[in-house]
Image (cartoon, rainbow over all chains, first blue to last red):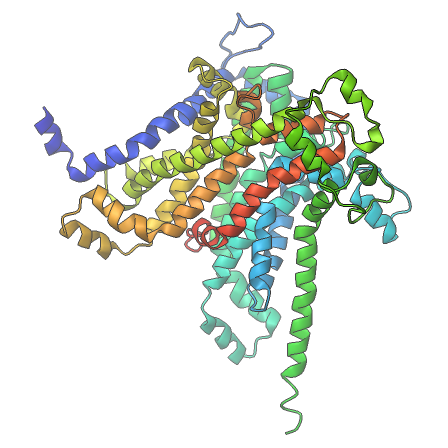
Length: 297
Length: 309
């Protein structure tokens, strides 16, 4: 029997199985099983305040989610938040990459500084910005007053029109560095010949950027867009720490809705259904970005 | 003729000035917020509640940090906590003594995750990148697909799994959970690194009588040091930062990590801001030090796959 196995699977396959086994085992327990289990949950009407009756309801939970007013509010908030975060992160990262790609004294120091926001834990990031936005003691009010941009102190996080943008700002601060690093690496891979050729052809700085740098950056930019979208769309920590969905429903995003539905209302079934909707959306979006950018630029 | 030597000078000065301005803006944006957090942590409660705020600490003191490190010895009860005047910073949160144990928990979890993550990922990445076996693509996609579902969706089922294993409120539960987050990403990074190592080296090793284990040990590991260091750092930082799972899977000092204890302070409105800011600074120091020390490796390791797309 063992000999038969040996004949059927060569040395390569047996080694591969052995080498891959530990990872597969761990991921089965802590990733695959929970993922499948939460799908099972999403098909049942499970409410923790009524633990014994948990009937199978098929896709009713999903339909219920789509009928829920809060869900569409959350979709709108999440869309605004994600679009702003991803767009500004990418734009800033591009500017920072252009700066750090230049050769000048102090360049290495700036690159080390760039890693500071990346390494800052998100809880501390939330704490830091909440403290900066603080209505009485915060830096933002003091700074803007000094510059004459506002006339009196404002309650920044209490302003429904600004809350999402202010949280996005905190997220951008933390996310920009990795995006910038990815763009820098792609920039470094652009052959100098292309720039020299463009110069010979009489292209100015902006033309060189537009016709040489930008097209060559496609793979890096694509990675940044996909990655930033995937993480921004599911941000949670900052919302819990800074606003808890408020004021009103101004920062009521999808991941916050999932948290409230699951841990405050204890409706696990609909909570799981929302999670699946979010997961599938993320997946489709990433795929769309890859397809779209893969072809266009 | 005389004008020619001058022409390159003006653009160069312009370029220098532009670079300087942008560098200054960059430093202000990246370091400004952290600098203010540090500055606040060095001020007493009375000083940080001044209006307008003190940009720099008027009389820098480490008293907030001292409070954190001596909180374990101090008996914080309703009475002792009310004695201090709010303005002098006497308001230590009741959970202050949890800070040091949670710092220790964060370190323990981080180190375990970093080491186990590397051991698990290296073998799997080698198999996927180098060996051409049946089900190779399927393995890769399955591993990556586990990261598509948002963390918040996994919290409940994972909680049930961990509870059935009897691991709730243990450091071990956090380690296992964090591996699920770090392993797929690490495998992804290592595969793109391993694929960049010339295939001839692998063939030479095999001809010299190395098995897969030998090829991994003598060829791939020594050549991918930057990626390995990057993976260690990345796993430690991920585990140090993680919040949602720790929030649900831990209940008290025995397993709670630093972000959980700090977020507890933030929600507790009686907490003095000077104290929370100091706790925040303590939480920033290890990851930032690590990131700056291993900067070179992080940049080359984390971005190995970027160029290929």
